[in-house]
Length: 55
Image (cartoon, rainbow, N blue to C red; front, side, top):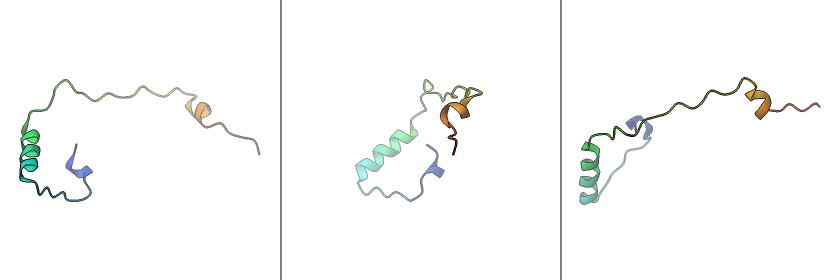
């Protein structure tokens, strides 16, 4: 997760928990986890999800 996603500072007062978090952050990233692009929407997506009602 990007640090920019945090809106406030986080203070961890438990020394053991702070060390556990720091150790986990130093681990190499898991190469098996990858982001996936969602499928493209169909051309009639607007008509399918946003049906217009006659007034």
